[in-house]
Length: 611
Image (cartoon, rainbow, N blue to C red):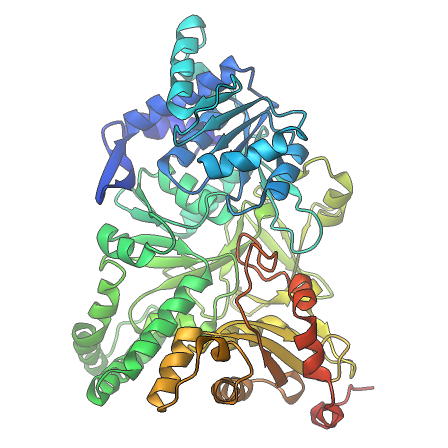
């Protein structure tokens, strides 16, 4: 069934699947399920509770929490009340929370616990629109009448419903496709974050476009661990999953994802590439300590898988001999790898950042499909995606059926469709910069479309480095290739207005320590995160190997090893784990200058610019 509003979709699904357990959370080592009717009852109480506070159409309500059924139900409660949800990353510090509460003009905030509520309390005095707060874990002991515990707030909703003539069915029928559904604040790699305005129609068109490209039904089981405040998980693991009556399990934390995968046995998992990078590194690192015979069997199986993938990408049957080899490889290797992710996985979906072609092809060879897509918060978010029937590794797939993609003269990707935002909240200037007079949204990404219609992303337009020799260098492909190494955790490529390319590298501490141990060397934890010669030798070997795949002028000529990871707390990563290059370069300016000090001979390695 096609829905035009999220509230309409919620109403239909909770009636159709009233007795089916749809949401699951873990409590005291047991997974607890909530049925459609239980979810509907809670959402109804939240919606009427908000109505009692005067919240309805035109009101914005913030949601500051990690993933849980209560996050999902609070979102639906806000939406069914007629209001719009402002999703706030729980990793943000108090000043960032204050900015969003203020900018969004939020009247109510749902806060996960006392840690999140403390951020609200620090901000409240500077937020004139904020009137009430709801503490989602019922831990509030404050006598302030403006602050409710979650269960008490449900009672407020129950009471208000009994006092008014309006029914829940009346509430869910009122929102229209053009009504504001949510404000999602951009991660803000440059400047203050902007509130992306998405309507019911925006979101439901993207749900519809996604379902037409990838077949989902009520037999699916999702494991949810990406932040629901992120548009990727919100649209895919929240709205799309719910729209078909799938089961959604909420992971206990990002650290428990490997364990939860084995317990839940999901059929679909959405993640950013970092999960797949870590899995890839873990497999390769684990093989090093395996007997030589086992290593040979593993890589033989991967070779068979790569050969089989070429047939599968063309939707062709495997030749008899290859099919036989593939069955043997599955028994010996693939089945064991698949068991680590639950054994029932149909596919992973990757988004939020570029996925390395090497990693996509590796997992495909192990009979695990990763479908990479592309989009932005401003586009609800999906613009393109690979599908089970049409995969091209290294690409982000083809446009959804209701999305148009064009490449501008300068290589920028432009998009148009019913999923494109209506603009930025209270920021007309930024809206005009993003959406031109012909209705094309300017993504800020550089890319190209191949002869079969697959889109390839080169880099962010603003990230392109221009060397002093006039060469344009896209750092993302090099950064992705380097982080495929089991010994490299994070990397930033440098070289803008410089005479050669260099890098800042954070080593993967455990993997480097294990490698040094096999070499009979012992290096302290502090020395691993330094320019220790033994550590630098390992990283240098990795850099040299990776750089063989790049042109001479692109290759990393120097690098510095950094003493710690980039973090969200230091402002070096956005909540979606994108590197904030400007902050990294500022925080590690000494390492940057060290790369370029005393090496004029490096210019000899750089190809001159063409006249």
